[in-house]
Image 1 (tube, rainbow, N blue to C red):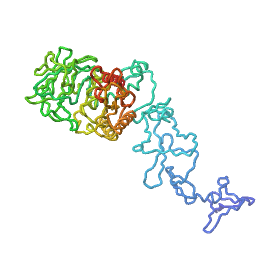
Image 2 (spheres, one colour):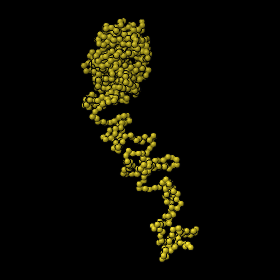
Image 3 (cartoon, rainbow, N blue to C red):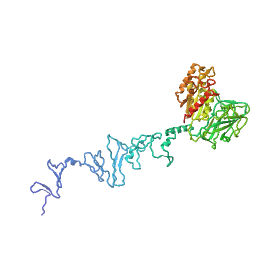
Image 4 (cartoon, rainbow, N blue to C red):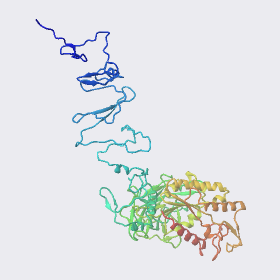
Length: 612
């Protein structure tokens, strides 16, 4: 007979309820197992201290999904998702040998994300992103590297903070100690100190000159730079040809009639060394008020250079000679081809031989007066253009080159002058510049600023004179003498000046000489009187006052009035040593040549003081 062993019983003494192996206590539906306050529930002898609320947080949990008010339980892959906010002292993404990353999503759905990840390092090292102490709330933006101008691209080199800091506080165009050099908008930098300098491509050529030696070139490098810049401007957009000789004329003087040919041999001085000369000859006359006119017929011209004396070199135009000069602005002039075998040193004299041929009854225009006893010769009816024969006659008028251009190679920085005005600069002043400066004389008897300001009246003269670097404008007497107002004369002079300024020519203005009558051939001051009424004479004085203000757009002025007027603007010719004028308007140029000599010396001295 078997005996049943109870699985649930009171331990001896009755203070402990025991559930033996194989036994259980079931709480049926509606029943409760209640541990009263002060009581305890033990598992394997250890008291469970969690409260019922704390234990309930594990109820209804889905592993791997965060739920509000519930315990967090990872899933089988140790994943957990859907946290809202997570605070942690340290967070590791991944583990050694297992790549980790942190994804940050934007506010808008399906708009990408930011991933923080780490590539394999060379060694078992740590890369730390550390925010240094800042004095304000700071937001660091990472701009689009494909669009943002401020984006700092990653360098393949290891740039240190110190190396990046050399950009901080840099001002473009200004050098600063310990900072990077950033050129300005025009690729300039204000100051650099260097122990060595090389110029040229590649390694370049080492500059061995000292600063003192460089400064000695012109006083300082800034002055040299300005001179070179202006010289390049005056060589007509980089061309190396420029006026290089004196005694070039481009104005009406007289017409030769009753002859069919002539040879002219004119002497010139090389003001600067040059080679490959080019000579301009014009079939030109100026009918004052009617513009530039040809003599009415074409002329045949050829020319040559004689240098040294006794060696004659023919010059060609487009490889041929002679050349027919027509009767229009386009056909009425010629420029010879450059001859690369000719080189003339500064200060050397050379001759231009010009031969002209016309038909019976035709004429040609001379463009300069040849002084009796001077070095210029002519002869009718012979062709000595390519021989060493000397023409027989001196004096009267002749055909002079309108301009003599030479290739200076950009090596000499001296001005070349155009003279624009009436008979005073046309007949007197050009001769004062002979042997001194390279020039083209466009002065013309009876000319007015009113006429020259009109484009149709000066096409040829302006085209040729524009090759010069400087221009002296000397108009006024004929304008005032023909009732031009002060405002009109000023406006005409400014119109002419703007024409040349637009082409890079420096323009200077001249004051006016006295205009008087005399009862004793200008032998005394007291017997001189104003030539004009008080109104016009006052315009004359007001114009001279205006000249001395260096009005816009002029670069400066010359004051010949101070040379020949007894006192500034007194309107009385000097009488020192005898009369200084023969007619009260023009300086005297017959012995004693007081007025002419004084003006010629004065303009040579003044012009020599103006550099490029």
